[in-house]
Structure formats: structure tokens, C-alpha cells
Amino acid sequence: MAVLRFMSHGLRALVVAAIMFMAVPAAQAEDASPAAQISAFRLKNGEGRVIRDATLDRIALEQARAMAEKDDLSHEVLGPFTRRVAPSKAGRAAENIAYGYDNFDKTLGQWINSPGHRKNLLLPKATKVGIASARNASGKRTYWAMVIAGDYDSDRPKPAPKSRGKAVVAQTAPRAEKSETKPVTRWGAKPPASKDCHLNIKVIGLCI
Image (tube, rainbow, N blue to C red; front, side, top):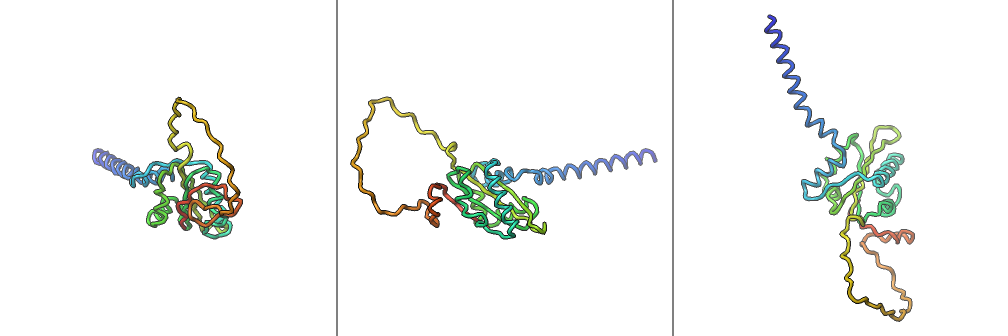
């Protein structure tokens, strides 16, 4: 009887150990950071990793909180995206928003299965990302915002050093008369207001 009892305890320990071993991958997947999950998806699709960025996190948090406060899923709750993302000093950026799921795993899955959101997740040359969520007043709805960006000055290759040959003397051209030609909008999107004309960010996509 003692031998059987010992074997029973041993078998039970093996079963518990096996269950714990099987649960490790699932736990690791749940514990993976949002940036790590996005990076894993990007690497599978030929794009580079992204890291969390404090500025993008703040922009995403402000957007998520504004949507939750107004209970409105919209990119415009705080104004145009080009203005909101300007502090990041990125050359290109995109934003995904969503509501419904309480955890990022399911929200990311929802974005991956949507062509527009998927395209933003795979933004070329992206190196940084910001993610945030906020609940509405009732606490029953969670809003998510993700801002992904790249093409920073630090990401661009440095120009080759200038040759030490004979210096070139620049010649001053005669001043042309003022032209009445209207300024051209670079990115073909809706022309920004005059106070936003200094912005030079390529908005790749805004997806709900």
C-alpha cells in the first residue's frame, strides 16, 4: 500500500508538472509586451522591429482618453492627426484605433485581420510605436490607440563627407519678383490649416 501510495503521489506530480510546462508558452504569449507582439508580426512580414517611445505613448494615451471621455471612436476627437503627431518629429506615421476588447492581444488580432489596420502595422521604415487604452465613464468600454512612426532624422544615413577640392564660390542670382503661385501640398491629403503648414509628416493611414 505504501508503494502504491508513493507511485500515486509521483504520478500526480508528473501530471502537474506536464500541465505547468504546457501552460508556459501561453503565459509567455500573454505576458509579451505590445511592442514585442507588433515586432513579431512585422518580422514575419519582412519589416523591422519597433520599440516603445515615450512621446508616441503620450500621443496615443491622449487620443485614447479623449475617445473614452467622449465615448466616440474617431481620429478627430483631439484634432488632425498631423498636428497631434508633430511632437514625435517623425517623417512618417500612422494610427490605429479600436474599442471593445479589454486586452491588447485580441485588439491586435482585430487589427491584423483588417486590411487597413494591417497595412499600418506594417508601416515601412517604422522604428517606434506608442500604445494606450482607456475606459469610458461606465467602465464597460475600452478604447485603444496605437501610433506607429519612423523615418526619423537619426534613422537616415549620414551624407558623405564633402571633398577637400577647390572651393566653389556661389554666385548670387538676381532676385525674382514675388510670385502669386499658391503653395503646393506635398502629400496629397486634405490641405492643413495655415498654422499647420510647418508640419512635414507623411500620414500613411488612419484606421478605425
